[in-house]
Length: 392
Image (cartoon, rainbow, N blue to C red; front, side, top):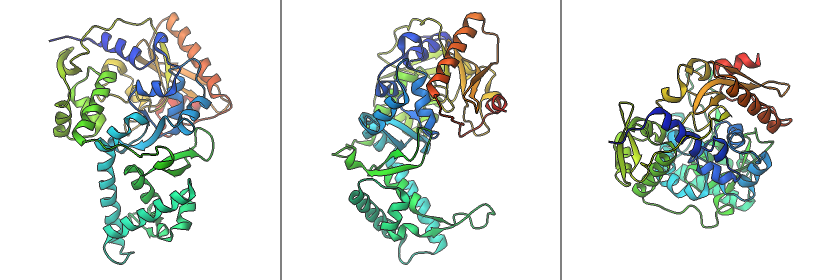
């Protein structure tokens, strides 16, 4: 059995995630492919993840890829999380994840409608009609906000109180519910937001305006196998539990997906791990590298078992829900955290002694990130202890 220690895993991470200096990329879509997908719950993460992996790309390049070239697209996928994905991966993500999410969305929202008793007749057909009317209205407009569509489709203004027994719950229109469900079915997409690259006030567009033929259909088994293959190439070797966590699938679904591709078992310092059968060659270590990764960056969020790159720093860098904040990396390990202050200054704090060479490289990355922000100020959606301290 091939043995792969933490040092080689860090070498693979630096090269395949385009964090080592010699691996950084100058094509937005290719950078995204090197991570499979980008986390996009916080819209700033998408841009800052690209910034950390390139020397020449700017926010304008990322916006062009998203909204002009349309080589990337936002969607809900694994673990019902928002991601930005390359369009060539959409068929796999749709069949492997999004179709199931649409079923769950309809079931959940339908239950709320039934409990409230706000409609006449069966909920399923009623919701299906509202979805069709909303899609038709969006086709007629070309692009629209939820507020605009609710004027075209009055039933979108149907109000439901999802938790009437709770003091914090308030009646809400079903507009967002319907739009999110249509997004999960691959019929509509999130377009350019109203505001800059930190905004999440998206407009919506029919998929036909982005992909004239829509999202290609794949068999579920093939789709899940392809998604697992890409993850193992970028994030492998890794224990089975990491793959199960990242996909959000059941253990049976993960094992079925693995049966679609050729994998081998390897030894990860005493823990069984999985690797693609054609990816067993040793990976030479790149030159030492520094990086400042944003909150929810796909690299630190790519594994559930993180000791080999995180060490003892989780209490300072993660919030209570398991979301990582901005992290400082040196040569494949997290060694500190960073933040942007209100005046635009990027500050960082090292949580261990890394030596003068590393400190200089990290300081240079902090200066580069500050320049990349320009006049933009971006507070992470999920505040972590160290990020709060640095900006207090």
